[in-house]
Length: 205
Length: 205
Image (tube, chains in turn purple, yellow):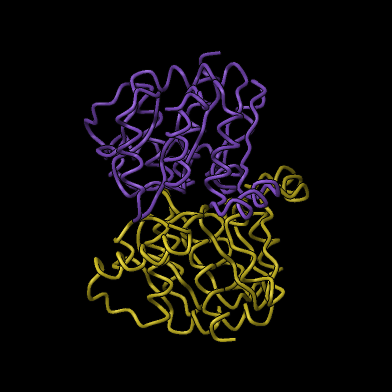
C-alpha cells in the first residue's frame, strides 16, 4: 500500500469506529486527523473548537500568515507542501540564541521568552502550542493586554502540571481556538491540526 | 516553576497515579517518561520491554552509537545534550535526496528506502520507529536476513493500518526491543524512550 492509500484506509477505519460524533464536516476533518496521529478516540469527547476557529485559521493560511510553534518538533512536523502555495512561514523560537540569552538574563524560562517574541510574529497568524503550558498561559496574558493578536490559537499542551488548566483558560476566552479539555495533547497533535487546516485551505482555493 | 521543577512534579503525580505498576526501576524510568510525554497511562499495560533492551540500549549509547529515526520530528525531539558526551549521532533519512530519488526510481515508499539505508547505519546502534509501520516491517526483514544488526529497536509506530501488527511481529523476535501492543505510539513517545535511555546512560557513567 502507498502512503496515501494507508491514509485513506485509516480514515475509513476512524470513520467507522467513531460512529456518531456530532462534529460538522470541517470540524471532523480536524478531529479525525488528531485521532489519526494519536490513535486516540478520546479526542472526540475532549476537543473544543471555537465557532470561528476554522474560518479564521483557513483565512489566515490563505493570506500567507506566519505560523509559530512552541517546539521544533512541531515546526518540523508541519507539512510545508500544502502551506508553500500560500507563502506561509513556520517558525519556532525555542532554540533561538536571542531567546536563550534573554531568558538567562531575566531569569525566565525559554518557553516564556519564546512565547513573547513569537506572539509579536503572529498578528493575524497562527500560534500553535503542543508542549509548554507556560507558553500558552503567557500567550493568553499577551492577548489580554492587547500585545498579541493571533487569528487562531492551537492550544494543545500536554502534561501533568498546568496543561489542562491552561487549556481551560484558553477555552474561556473568545479568541478563536482549537484545543482540548485534558492533560493529553502534544506537538504531534498540534501538527495534525495545522496540516488539516492547510488541506481545507487548499480544497477551498 | 522552572522546567526541571515541573518535570519533577509531573513524575511525582505519575508515580502516585500509576500505583503498583510492576516495572523494575530502570524499566519504570522509560515507561514513566512515555506517560509524561503522552499523558496516557495506558502505556503501563501496553509497553513491552525485551529483557536485554535497556542494557543493550545503554551500552550502545555509552559506546557513542548511531541513532536512526524514521521521522525528522523524532530526530529533532531527541535531546542532544545527554547524548553529546558519548559522541552519539542522530539522523533521519526520510528527506534525504538520495532516498527520494531511489524511492521514485524503484516505485517504493520513502519509508521503505529510508529503512534500508538507515539499517546499514545502525550496526550496534539504535533504530527508533515512531511513525511508519512500513519502516518497522522492512527493518525486521533486514534483521532476519542478517543485513541489519541494531543493538536495540525502539518500535513505536502509531496508526490504524499495520502499526499494531508490526509491533506484534517485533515482539515475537529475540531482538532487544522497546515497544507496545497497541495502535498507539508516535514520534514523541519514541523520543521519550531515547531520552530516558540517555539519562540512564549518564547516571551510570
